[in-house]
Image 1: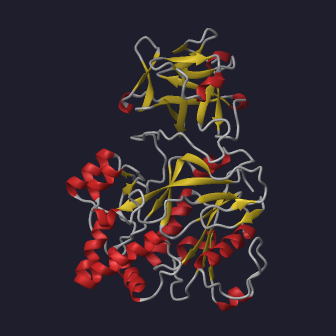
Image 2 (image 1 turned 90 degrees about the horizontal axis):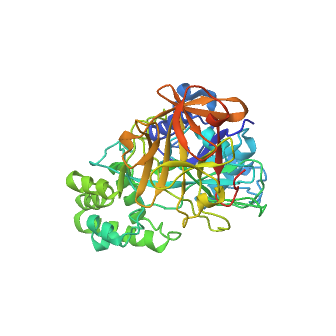
Image 3 (image 1 turned 60 degrees about the horizontal axis):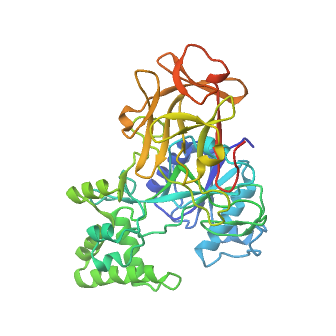
Length: 465
């Protein structure tokens, strides 16, 4: 079991084109294995010749459920459970038993991870007392009405907001009443769960570990969950007609029942035209409305099928982490420790080496930690400010200032050293942190003062070391 290795499990009832897109996406992201459990024998096809042994597919028919082994913490299962969530729980636990990866991600076929960094690298950075890592959910919208085979044909995604004035710009009162923060699906993100710890209680989104000392649902800024909840219009139409013509709302919460009632009203009044109208209200944003949503940050554009992480055009999210058991700090990030045990920081304008690292994650402090984001040997340095990020920019005198324009941010070459140390080089000169706290880019060679250690700070998990 290699550090940071991961696999994916999903219980699926979907057409082949969705299944193939799902599998291709996760294999391209580096998953060790994809465990597919087909919930319906009539929807059990995928491109076996293309994906080969990295996919393990199982048809969940009656014999499958009759021979299900014991899967604690679930009670013994001898027949197909009526509730889909229980079937998902059982299949996740079975895949978890079988896999050799360190982490397992349980998702639906319409949920795709967007990775700013290699997934295994992100997971390997979490210490051993982290049980699960939770992903922020973004919900897909479309700039036109998608048709068959176009469920994933969008780069636009809503970001959750409680700002009622923003929501009122895009939804009438009736439609707004059945959304939550602008979302039609769930807002609770899915999680990567470690293989070894015993699970006390199952959940589709957030299983609970038996060991109360383990940390659950730790956030990451490097991975998001893209939820294609609406899918194409033909898929929406099929699901909606099934739900409004049969009594399937028994287990739905009040908001979902009200949403179904609105869909039924549109269909009863206008037939197919009504279904298309309500679909557009839910999932389609076009023209000036789309531009407005983008400018307000309610919608963001993500090229999620670009599998090679790159610094080009990439902003780093300003998203301090909060945890329900907050004890020490809600801050999370990667900071740089100097050879004389200080940390690079900013005093709003220039970069210095702070002598009091404990102050770096306190919001009331006047100094802010300098963080590093690096991909493929190239790095940016940045700080999180209340009005947005600022970026390290090397000036003609070789000092470093913090500027709000990412286009002017300096791109440092990362030089790997011994003992996990790194150095940063720009135009042949190395970054130096002197004993008196100055930081300058003017050294021709690497000595102790040009060497840094990357230190990860996790909320409630670790402190400076």
